[in-house]
Amino acid sequence: MDFPIYKLPPPPVLTPFCIESLGLFTPVATLSPLGSIASTAWPTNNLAFFYPFRLYDWATAYQLLFWVGATSSGNIDVGIYDSQLNLIVGAGSTAMSATVNTVQELNIADTILPPGDYLLGVVCSTTAGTVFGSITADENILSSVPVYEQASALPLPNPCVPVMATGVNPFRAACGIQFRSIF
Image 1 (cartoon, rainbow, N blue to C red):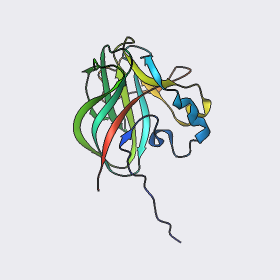
Image 2 (cartoon, rainbow, N blue to C red; image 1 turned 45 degrees about the vertical axis):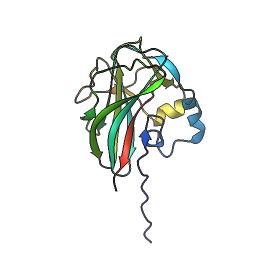
Image 3 (tube, rainbow, N blue to C red; image 1 turned 60 degrees about the horizontal axis):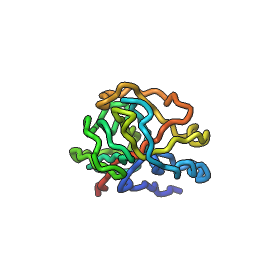
């Protein structure tokens, strides 16, 4: 008997907190630490973070997002990497929005992404700039949902050479991608 294959459509907005990043089999009980998102200082100047995600269907990325926290300072960059760690599209080094506690939209060329595995990269130039994010010590999440990092990575490099996050409690920045579905 053949069963139909179901594909999840791409979300309108993908973040490190979405099911595409956390995985379909992440127990719901482990998601509670991700609910405590707050404005916090960037951990280290020019330290980039990379969050894996998977697309199950074709999608067009048309904007990258960065949630500016309570203090605006420095430059940011957000980008999408393929599974070979090559930068597909990025915003480039951009001044952080002067408007605090808001989403900064970074326009990019419409980029068609096939189903597959990717990394969402984000970096800020200074610890004086804040971003909405979460620092989790939940071992269940950390064991199933890796966070990668790379030092001195502004603008985001091509290719990236990330390593597993070295901090005891890796940082999850509120950043994202806006998608349009392809029919």
